[in-house]
Length: 122
Image 1 (tube, rainbow, N blue to C red):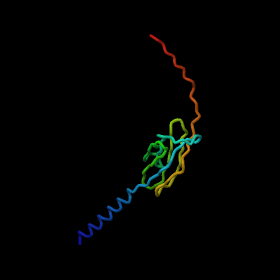
Image 2: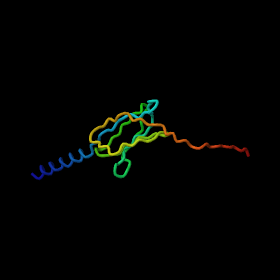
Image 3: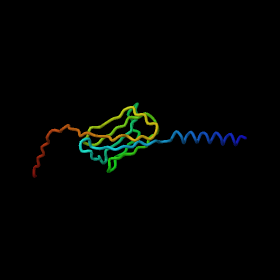
Image 4: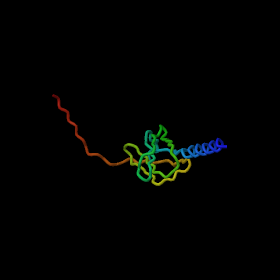
C-alpha cells in the first residue's frame, strides 16, 4: 500500500513539473516599413515586464521570420535592427502560441555629424 501511495505522489509531482515547464511559441515577421523587404538578422527579444530582464531572443532569418519559445506569462516584446527605430509591445499576455502580425520597423533618421579623416605620411 505504501508503494502505491508513493508511486501515486511521484506521478503527480512529475506531472506538475512537466506542465510548469511547458513553453509556447511566439512567431512573426520583421520588415522594412517603406520597402516591405524582410530585415534579415533583425532581433526579436522577450523581456520580463516587471524589470526588463531578457528572457530569450532570436535573430530573424533571410525571410525576416523569427520564432521564440517562452513559458506562458506577461512579457514585453522588443524588435530591433541597426539603423532602425526599435518597437516595444508592453504587457503582452502570452498564454498559448502567438502568431504576431508583421512588424514594420522604420529607419532611424538621426544623422551623425560629418567626420573628416586626414592621413599623414611619416
